Length: 512
Image (tube, rainbow, N blue to C red; front, side, top):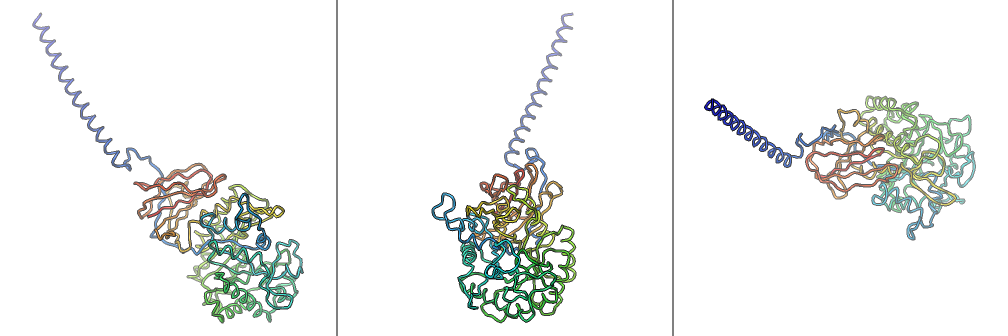
C-alpha cells in the first residue's frame, strides 16, 4: 500500500514538472514575440498593427489639366468712391481704409493674394448724369473733358485703387467696358432705349476702339500692367437701364471686335495686350450663337485663343454641354470665368455663401477647365451676396465676409502657373469634399502640391496618397470664426494623414 502510494506521488510530481516546463517555455516564447512586435511597431509606424484603416484621396500629379493664370475681382461700382476713404482703418495710424481693402484683396502676406484686377473703363454717365440709372454708384466716369480733350485726372479714386492693387500684387489688369462712352451712342445714354436692339452706330465702332486703346496706352505708360481689353459685357441682355450696358447682336459684335483687334494691333505699346470676349452672361442660352460668330469668323477665329463668359444661372449639366460643344466644334480654345456672384438677396456673413461660391469654382475648374476665375465686385454696399467685402458708406467703413477668406483658399495658394491635376477617392464621402489639386512652384521655387477641400459636414480624417514624395505639409482653414489661418508645418513621416475641420474650406499645402 505504501509503495503504491509513493509511486502515485512520484508520478504526479514528474507530470507537474513537465507541465511547468511546457508552460514556462510557452510564456517565454510569447514574451519574445511580444517584444518583437513592440520593436517592429516602433520601427514601422505604417504597420497595420498600429495604423487605423482610413479612406484615401489619391492624387495623380502626372495627369494634368489646365494651367491657371490667376484669380481676381472687379473694381466696378465701388472704387470710384472708396478710393477717397483716406481715414485710418481701426486703430491703425498708418493704413487708411482704402489701402486696408486693397491689402485684404491683393496682399499675399496680409490678405488673399489676388493677382487679377478688373478696372471698369466707364461710359461717362457719372459725368453727364443722363439716362435711367437711379443708383449713382452704378454710373462711371470717362476720361473726356468738357473741352473734348482727355482729362486724366478724372476717375481719380478708382485709378488710385487700381494703382494700389498693382503695388500690392495685381500683375494682370483687365480693362472692361459695360457700355461705349455715351458720346458715341445712338441715344446719348450709357444704356439702350426700350424697344431697340443696339445703341452703338457702326460709324462709331472705330472711335470706341480708339478711345479704349488710348486709355489703356496711357495707363500702361504709368506702369499699370494692362493685359486684356474686354469691350463688350453680356451682349445678349437688353440693358434698358439700371446700370451702364449695351446690347449687341452677333453680327454687330463681330464688327466691334474686329475694330478693336485692328486698333490694338496697330499700336506697339499694346503689343502685349489681348482683346477678350464675349463676356456672355451665362454658359447656356444664346452664348453658343455669340461664340460661334466669333470663332467661325476667319480673322477672329485665328486671333481668339480663349473665350470669356460668366457663370450666372448655369448648372453643372449645362456647363458640361457647353464644354462638349466647344471641344467638338472649336478644340484647343481655352475658357475663362470672368464674372460671377450668387444671385441671392440679403447680406450673408456665414459660411453658407462661401460654400456656394466654392462649389461654383469647383464646377468651373473641373467641368469647364477654366484657366482663370474672377468674382464680380470685390466690395459692395448693398444687401446682396456679391462683394467679398461689405461696405458701410455712411461710416466709410469696410468688413470682410466669409467669401473673402474662402476665395483666399484658392487665390493665395494656387498661383499663376499652377497646373490642375487629377485627384479622386473610392469613397463618396471624400469626393463630396469637392477636392481640387494643383502642382506648381512657390515663391522660393520649391515644388508644391496644393489641395482645396470644401467640408460642409463634420470633421473628416483620411490619407493623402500622391504619386510624388513630400517632406512637409500645412493646412489653411476658413470657417465661421477662422479667417484663412495656417497650421504649423508638419513633417511627412510615412503616410500623410490629415484631419479636415468640420464646416470649413481647407487648403492642404505639401512641399517637396
